[in-house]
Length: 453
Image (cartoon, rainbow, N blue to C red; front, side, top):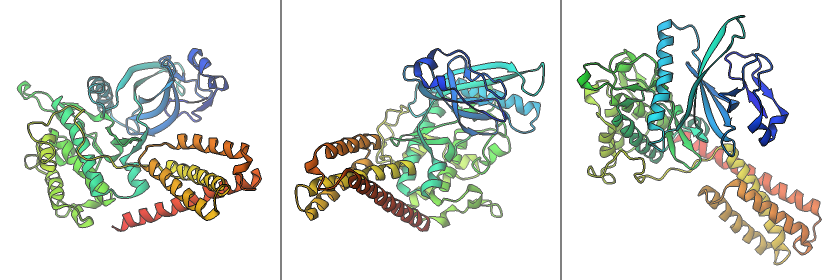
């Protein structure tokens, strides 16, 4: 089993322990240490980091396994790790934000199914790797792992989003924001990379590391920005360090929507000479949706929508009557999530389908005329592909079907159409390669058309 060292700047963080390939050994093993820097690899006695997921300005995220949960559950371990030369005040603020993320996730993660749940929050102290007789302190939080792609990765992979995809994204994230704002929480870092689409299409809002509790007006204090935000997505009041509001998140969500619609980076969609967003010249969408996004993007706080509920009512009045809008995550969706597939998923599905199609053609040609057998095989193959696009059947299940089909053809000579096993395998592989080639071609054409229109 590979274990990834979480110490920042470890020169060789990858470690391998053959004994941990056995699940029973992994559950009972004593502490393991990085062979390079000596950092403990089993965090808090239970979490084994296996892969680096990403690094930000103040945190690193790792894919990990929880050895105390049946099935060795996958999870995300996030480590507080300031990067670069920052002041003591910035370090204090960043650490407070990281700790607040744990507090917020503990409060809302269990209440809303589209916010990753917090599993643990802890700190460890270890000897320094570079300074003898010194110690280093690291903070960690562990949360639910969402298996999928974030919207920034989707944009890179498939090109700009359709209007229907943007409407679905807005609907889901607005409902999440409606929930968190009702809890007096402002996210303050809405952007494509912080919105994850799980493999079943459900969207999740991630990275509450920049959240800020909104103090009640009665207390006489304000919820000010700390200066930690994503350039291009933050509204003027946040960039200047002033008070932030629920509509601060709505502004960032609108920037997210226009970058996904146009496929252009946020700075290229804003003209500083006239202090206005110029995104509408890049797309042709419903005027009403465009007007709603423009209002969310207004520089003055008082001119924007003041709540996520207002935007939901404006965008979906026929689906969400004011008397039925709630903050609960169980409200049925208005727009069904578009089916999305990774490149690996597409090509592996095509390969298995092509192999299975070739086996079907061989078997049928032993019983009926080759032309009819080929036609029936194409129809069955089309049905299999359609079932995959609707996620009625997964690639791994289709692989099982292909193995069973191959075994049947192998042990029933009457279905081999006079071929030997080597010829059958060659035809199956040829079918897989043809299916991969056709799928790649159609995916390329789709990307080109998406970029053009």
